[in-house]
Length: 204
Image (tube, rainbow, N blue to C red; front, top):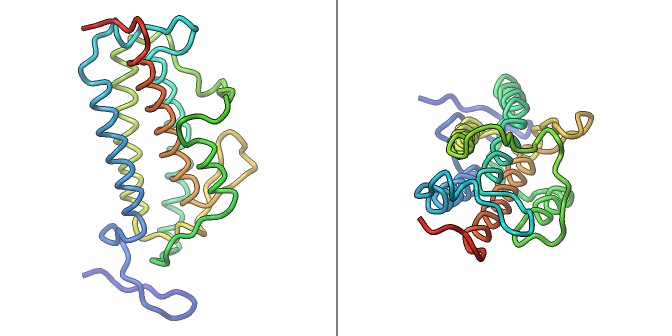
């Protein structure tokens, strides 16, 4: 049986991996992203994954590589914050409201893109890897991120802070970081859809 914890106000909370109340929206978004990615990418050959639009944009393999590298960059920061929060019993089932900055960051990522953004060098796809491997890397990081969502269930998402890899001196609330990463993925899945619909995309 799970042991109740208590907030400063004295209200008991049932905590642990079984407490999914605040995590449910994130898990739903992750499921939609996974299903979208599977439908877009699973049936494609290496030639299709490697094809690039005439405007010089990324290939589907490069999109996968970018999403994988972006998630990999955040996973250690998420792990550190989640484990520290569990260690100090930072639990809450209070409804999530988000911060203005968090909502702005998510809005900036939501597709279709409102403006172009320069990709950080550390998140550039590794072009020397085979297209199928870049796809596999992305799908693996997708599952790794979902495991972090499950591990974060029951935490006080609004007050647990996560270090931002691109700006190490900055920290954001865990709920904002999770929402941002899911929106970032949606942005690039929208991009992947556009590539598949582009003129000249090779037929299997």
